[in-house]
Structures are given as structure tokens and as C-alpha cells.
Amino acid sequence: MTSHDAGRPLRVAIGEDDVLLREGVARILTDAGLEVVVRSGDADDLLQRALAYRPDVVVTDVRMPPRQEDDGLRAAMELRRRLPQVGVLILSQFCEPAYVTDLVGERPEGIGYLLKERVGDVTTFVDAVTRVAAGGSALDPEVVIRMLGRRTKDGPLQLLTARELAVLAAMAEGLSNTGVAESLLISHASVEKHVTAIFRKLRIAPIDSEHRRVQAVLTYLRADTRAR
Image 1 (cartoon, rainbow, N blue to C red):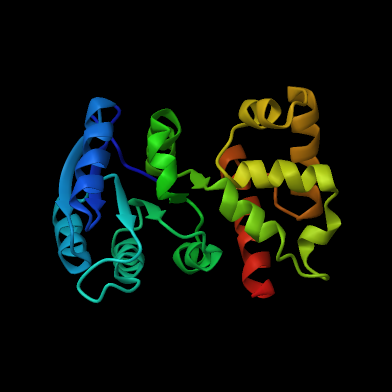
Image 2: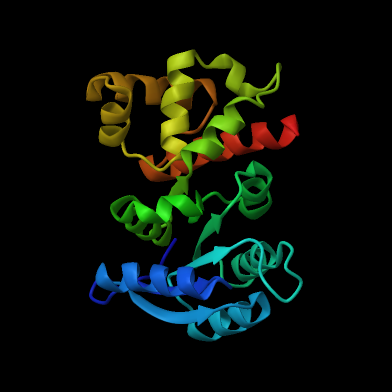
């Protein structure tokens, strides 16, 4: 997805109207070796400057001026429409899966949604930013749990066992097979077996591995959309 040159730092645009949080996020990312090219407290300004600077990833709040409603989310959706290669990581004070499904559309590549409290876990936060910039996904565990509770009775996820659902939920959070194994305290071989079963049951074609993972996450998100 991304056209990022490995020889230069990831370029980030930040949209957040709370100046202390905005500067804090910028400091965290700068200290991690990323380049912050846009800092904005207004959604319209964020969109215009992101279109001009073409960052690798945009980190933005949902509720921002000028309307103080879902302006940040709308700016992110418009940015994704006009620059599909730019990753988007939403930071929100609220756990609202609907924002994720609105943002994803037909493409889960390069999408993340974290609660603002996760910023304090610097390693996890920076990892989420870099993963989204590279075309991966990073969903907050609280959002994933909320989605699991909204499964429809006749949806494709009903074909999955409880363990396979847990593995898919971890995949939605953006974890690698190794990360899934560590999170669920199971072997790497078991994770591979479950992932293979998930792809088979969801009828995801045998294409490249990373694309299959995001397709599985897309199925997961679509199931949540139908449940709303």
C-alpha cells in the first residue's frame, strides 16, 4: 500500500485540537525517529495540509473543530478517498466500532483505531503508527471486544470456533502470528493452524499472506456492520 522509502523516516500528520496531547504525540513520534510534517487542531486545515504534504500516515482525533463533531473522521475518510496510499490511525476518547467501519469502507489496509489512553504505552502506540503506515491494521482491544459482542447469528463468523475468533480478534488488533501466540499463550504452530482454518472457513483465496490477513479483518468488520 505505502510508497514509503525505507531510507527516510516515516512522515506523520497529526490532527488533535488539544494542544498538550498534540504536542505530546508529536514528541513521542519524533523521539521514535519519525518525522512530524503536519500538526493541526482543525479538521479542514488537517485535510488541506495532509493533501499538500502527503504524509505516510495521519494520526487524528474524531471530534475536532470546526464543528466539534466527527470532523476528524470525515477528514480522514476524504483523505483516504483522495490519497489511498496514506495510512490513517484514529485516536478517540470513546470506544465506537462504527467509526472503524465507516473509515474502512472496502479497504482495511492502513487503518488503525486506538483509544487515547493507549498513547501512554509508547511502544504499542509507535508500533501501531508504523504498522498502519505500512498498510497493516491496528484496532484497539476494547473495540475488538465490542465487535465480538455484535456478531450476527447467520454471519460468516459463526463458522469459527471460539479459539479461531480469538485468533481473528488478535489479527484485527494487528498482531503477527508470533504476537498472537504470545497474547493467547499458545504455540506458533497452533496459531498457523487456526489462521489456515480461518482463511478456509471465510473462503479467502490463497493470495499473499498479508493481503489475506487484511481480508479476514475486513470480513470481521463487515460482520459488525451488519450487526448494527
